[in-house]
Length: 179
Image (cartoon, rainbow, N blue to C red; front, side, top):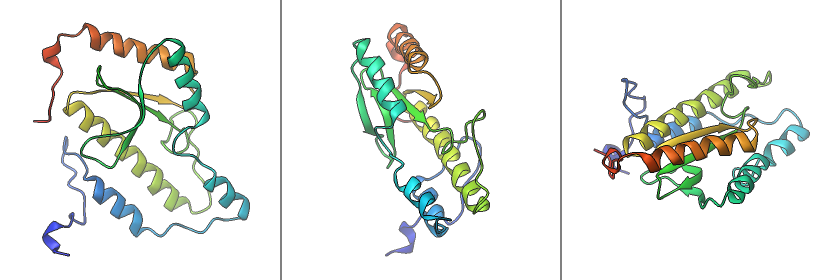
């Protein structure tokens, strides 16, 4: 492979500069995934779902009851990332963040086994979340992040407020393409 096509080995961390996604995954893949501390831990970690979590399914049910139409597990253009729910016409992307995986300020827990690896992993998730938010806003999308502990009704009300704000905004305020 031509070395000129490779991502740099370190992040360019200037303010407002997005982190290259390939670099994030490369950094994470360089860290060997630690062996589970027990077969029970291994079983639990393998059971974690990427899509269709209980909190996501409950929120989708509430939104459908409100007769809202949305796409699920939607690939974000130009990235290898995905939004949990997307209202394409309104250009609103919704992410349902797990308290453990995304370092919820109220419920985050830091594992004691392999603590350094987990801290780096979870903080990497948070950095990727912020980068995704900046990218989507730059291309004219609204981003709504919901913690898994938020009630589905409260989350749906927030999403509806964002959809209403977008519907009432002048259309020239939404960028169609990144600049």
